[in-house]
Image 1: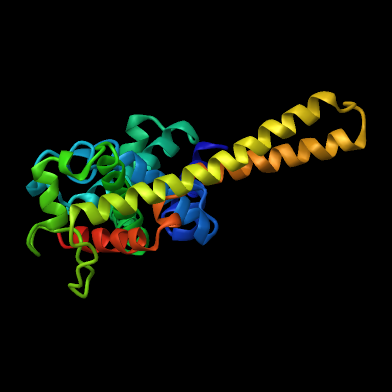
Image 2: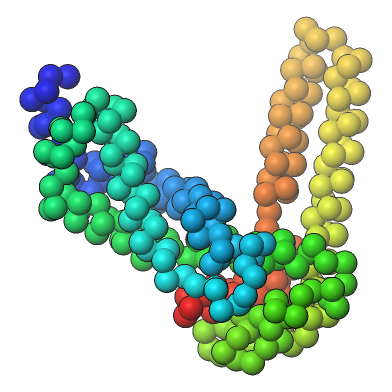
Length: 258
């Protein structure tokens, strides 16, 4: 690609959101957009926003905030765009200065904001998952630090247990801890069942002729079973407990207001 062709490509890139998303993020479908936001959620909550939205790191409930999510998504979008221009088009710093006009920077910011408005709740859902993970560290509800207890049984301005309709979904530490433990046990039961099936399948593979059709069929079953086990491991606890699903909705709703 000649330099002139590169500049023409950049011109096209910043005139069409669809082309931009395809080239920079490989987004072609709604599912692609969701998966990109899921990756962004992990980056942000395990990185720059961990002290505000990752409950494994939060020390004071006053620190909890979703106010900086939009800004961080804008920063990531800008970073990905610049990386593309440097790595794919081999642009120098001087060339970047030439092509990254104020108008094009605004184009990226607008796209990032649109992405946040459409799929930003994915980040808050990931935050809610860290809340569950944090609480499961404690063997008993009494062992939960008092600061975090306020998020469950505190007043309406403190608690994360209120839906957007101001309906409280959890009334006690014991109630929430019990649901978490039951969901965790249910997931473990499903996982153990499939792992036992996998062990049995491995034994069958070991005694079956490797050139036979049966061996090939068993290999396919093995592949599918591994995929199933991976899926079970990735399931949120809300998959196994309807009350926790409502709790997650309440946490997301509460975080939107912070």
